Image (cartoon, rainbow, N blue to C red):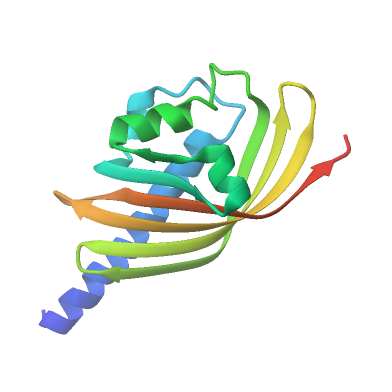
Length: 156
């Protein structure tokens, strides 16, 4: 196979791996579901991962978390067995993935529908900008950035 063809194949495989990684992350964050073990979340991130909220409202709500274990603990704190959410569903759209060797960048618009333990219902629109790294042949999340674009309460 030519070098150009091998590069194109590696790019397509990287895009596919990033897409599956994001689907796995969103699946783990959807509720209802069985309790998530922090190790399930942690294995999706690099050792030096960063997870942060951007923009005044999102940064204030979520802050910034560094390191695989800290990120997994933060995200996992919202998931069962926590009763924070009764329902939490994520939908990704407007996907853009760029692979450059062992690194990739992705951007999505995420729609999130949430029902909280107190009965409130909300709809969110969020921009996700995420950096990925291929470590020992496995694509992982290196830097997860989320910025809320809008949210509105929904009447039950």
